[in-house]
Image 1 (cartoon, rainbow, N blue to C red):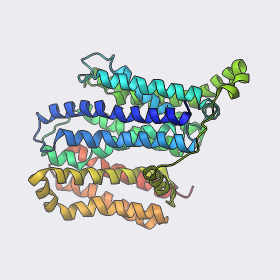
Image 2: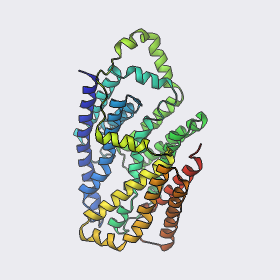
Image 3: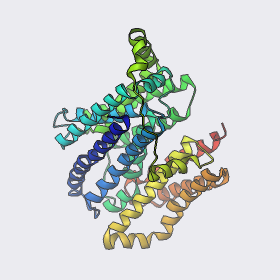
Image 4: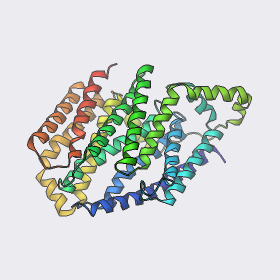
Length: 399
């Protein structure tokens, strides 16, 4: 069987992995909804929480299959599948909603990725592991994508509107939010920086923040998710890569089996064919003038937050429609307008438009704090994050 066929099989099983993850999220959100006044369906919330992540994973698999670049990103996707399997063995006190189907599908995806890497991508993965920065354009993308989706959904105003400000936060909850903000910034630094000392420092901080969140999940909140395990494993992997462990293992392999490497590593025979949907995504990204990770992160957080909020209003029935009418001008001013400015600022390379978005987010944050609006505290996390991302992006975009 050809390599393209195995990639298609992996694509199919990763698509199936969406279903048990979706069902598990529906169960969790349904239980949370019993303790709140949310009018939004748990099915809708689970859909917007889970689907974008798997679209990102499927896009990366398709990109790897067709373009044959950044193959180390496949290892990160395999690591995520392995964490789904490991989550099954956690104590029930830490993981209430275990799914044997999710664990089995995660294990199958992990095994498939190991097979593809060993049989068809061995030469490419070895070439990537020889470089200390080979992970930078691939392995970090999945982790950063998960974190962006996390902020765009969990910290969206949609949660504040649906809960009527009835959520109370302890010091531990606020500490977890702070650790997640740090993780987001560390991901962007790891993606954009080239200096070895800065990267190794960030990787150590990444391990500390992931370990802290893991410890808090075990000891304080008694809630440990697959994403917690994934971030911990990914932080250790990136640290080992920066320390040169990957290159050392490749050299050790080549000393023992180097004569068989070229013969055993198969080549995917079929020509690459890029699908229309995925080709549009590639063309969209390559058509932008500014390619700063700071600006792209701010842009995707803004776009996803806008989509989730507006769709939440639309599926919220009469209550959601009334909220949309009452806050239409406010929503356009602070939510849609800055995203448009960021889009055209990145596309045309205009810093002035990015500065306009920066000012809008800053004024919005100041206005929400000054007005003492009884919203969920998590809903005001996005504005200062956008301010920081845009500020650093504008200052460093020409470097």
